[in-house]
Image (cartoon, rainbow, N blue to C red; front, side, top):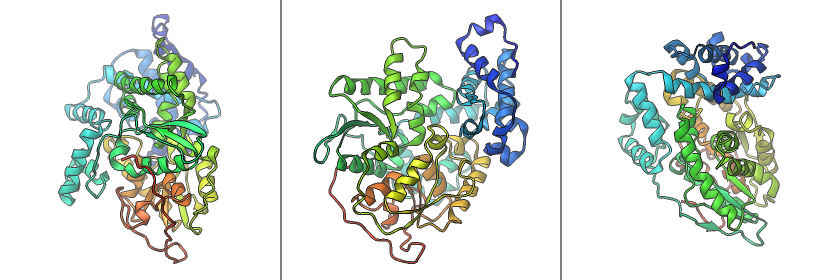
Length: 460
């Protein structure tokens, strides 16, 4: 793509980076077939190719973007399916992040949008704020879910039970069972601490049972993705910097073999820390080191090769490949292979590349499109008649779980179960994730078994 930036504009590092990305686009249009918003809307400007042209226009003009342009950029899910499809390796992820940062600096949104986006940036990364709000929503029950606007949308995604939260034990070390083969840090994150605490517990059990010492580093928290993808780069960098400092302390101490992330959106962000701090001479080296150490929990599980001695019979599991995992991190087949090796019958839906509509804060900010995508994904998964649905991201679990009566659980919870841990709560008659209801029979009609439990440490 031809660009017309002036020398003065190219002196801006952000513009210079954007120009390189823009010039790599050859207008082939392969991205359109896999873009969720283009598939639904059929509007060229709601496709990656169209948005690339809009970003080029916005940056070259240097003026204030109008509401129409902003609307098309806002409707992008950042699912990155286009990057998986693109034959020219266009770095759309960083281009759209640059565009959103520019929009937040130069475009004035209506007051209600500004208030909502500010609330999301502040509340979601803070479990001590998010937990009481979700607890109020749970107490209000159906009334809260009928509230208009964003409040009602958040209430509908909230767990049905009253979420409880307490800070993770700072600096707490979970020792390996038997000889230690690895020492790893686990990112506890933020939203997941409130909406899916069992996920961290399952992760710790699986890893410690297989020779990993698991550390919850004091000071590590939100990965920074919520603010960063809302255009607030500096707030996102502050959260990321706190994680860098926390993990560097562990690296300088007893060392780390990996930094494990079990929320795929967070994992994609942490693996991008090197790029995020590329212009910060004080943190660039540490950020690159952390990005290199970061692993999704299924990547590490594939390395440690659990024996899965307690594997249940071949229960039919529908695997949903989260966008941040398959497109953002390039991990698609590994989780399904692990589930199959653990003894489950794994099936995948039609259109596995299409987003479920969660996409961080998207299902709150763009409810109409998110609802259509969520219903489409839930229907495709239910058509497989699974006992349960597995996913690697808390946002997907909430989005899909709100639209199906079948249990929606994290992949690591199933792996932990097959390796001797407790069954996931949704398969055991309860649960703290939306949509988790008991389904006592497998696809063949046999009861869902409960492998023997082991006492093991919990993260919460």
